[in-house]
Length: 268
Image (cartoon, rainbow, N blue to C red; front, side, top):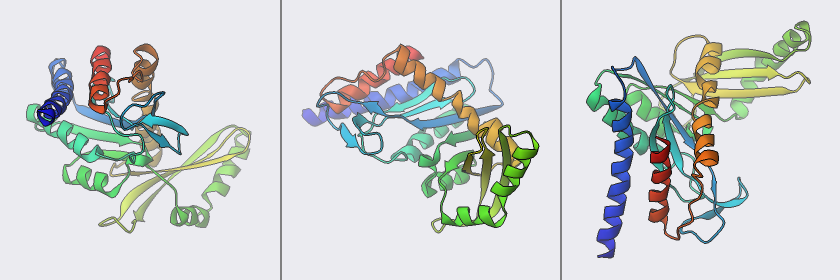
């Protein structure tokens, strides 16, 4: 009996996630030119003894670590999955993305789908799936010794600092693409887009992204990837501050999963 109840709860959560995609499709007057799927894990601090809340050394708190998924042009929610507090950022993300993509393509077989996420989602399985499913993606990518050496060899920071000085010590950014970079776990080279920034105070900020998009590196980074500042950051803020999404105070994990979905449905 207990297992039957748990199975029913899990199926209800799956059904509600499918409803989010259905709602997005039904509210379009016509097939959109493209859909952007934004995946964003977010910390959800816990203040009791809720099941599967665990201590995160990174966030320095006891928490859940749900995955929230939004459509990047409209901000509409496409998925919400509660997860234990110490899972990796990418835990389950490929399966979540696959369900949404397959659902969308049942309605719109030829829809162009873009995917965005931070560097916690830039795992080989995610890039492999996006390429196999013909998705266009851009994920943040953590720096490493190889990329640091490549940036130094091209003197990118020095060139950016010179341009910063010539521009009157105003904030300045320089962008570059590495098309021959290949991590050891990748089947082949992938494109790395690098941003080198000198701030007003003279500090440097170097960021990377991995993508299969064509076009100028500056356009990919500024016009597509950093638009995540609007979605998913804005709806996440509204869910937490306006609808108290992080009030998951039930003892049981599945009960809190359903509470999370209630908040997301209210936002929808």
